[in-house]
Image (cartoon, rainbow, N blue to C red; front, side, top):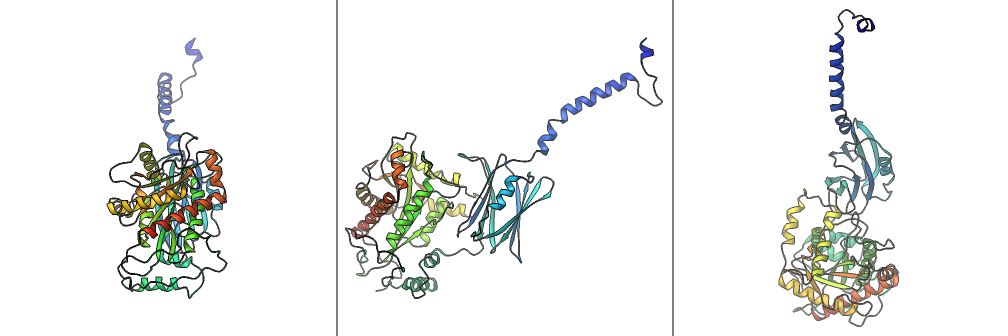
Length: 459
């Protein structure tokens, strides 16, 4: 019966038992191969795309669910940047990136996206000027997954002193302009400037209880221009602390810093320089470098605190410590602020790494002592408008305060994690009060501690 049910074998066909054995082997091999093939072919998923245009550089970020490799090259006539990203296919998220290029971006004119070859997407940036790009990846940290970062720097970076000049107004006969031009031509010869005129339409600062002009330069009997470096914390990829209503630390501290800059710039023989004047990320050591490049007489880093309990409140001022933190909270605060580079995204492969190590390993007892004096002057003024979290200047190893030759303080204006203080920080009136308090503190410090004459100052 079995033989009658089986079909007759064709010429050259395998016996029935052999065919069955081959089919079993084929199925088994398929079971082994199938789980591998989809993984090899599966493209990464883009979770978010962001752009951060600024005068200093533009950052483009692709956040993904896995780490990808990218290669880039530049072209001229016209200037273009080409980036090939492996492991991607065209998607709605990439098209969204095209729409995020802003008309006022200093570097990117437009962006084109195409599937260059299987599993490789090509981005072509049409540029407004020649750039020196940095392309690197970041591991998951905080709320971010893997990030592919494209930083577009100008081939010729603008000197920060020139940046101060360019933002001072269109007046070609500005005496400050002549001083800066003289510094650039011959740094060894430097004259004391006359009082710079106010920008048209600028209102004078409200009268303060201390003299508006700093005292005579120690040992010289003359005044010289004082430069105050203002450092709004966080920025760009790093939002800082976020309050319950959604207020971001990076936004509110920038507003306070801008107001304080206006107050400083309105004083005779004073000018302010912002380490960031827009929403972009600046690495901690670059903030220190910037202050030193403009020969700052004082460095003020502005922040808004956060704590795990919303009941925490009050303002604090911190200075650098060489011997460990003055309290557990100060150590925690320093660790949190020092993590900004991880969140904001630093290219550890860049040449600045060695520069960062040199700068951050330098600090002096004199600098710390002067910083404590500044901090105490700030606390005396801030306590008039807000409760102090600590009545004395705290100390810890804040990386951003490690300028070896500049008194440096970090001001935690309030706890953004406290609903009542967050509501105050939102208001222009309270931002004004904080700026005024710091302005008075700055003047009190220089009144009691006249700045030394610099090499090249002439009588």
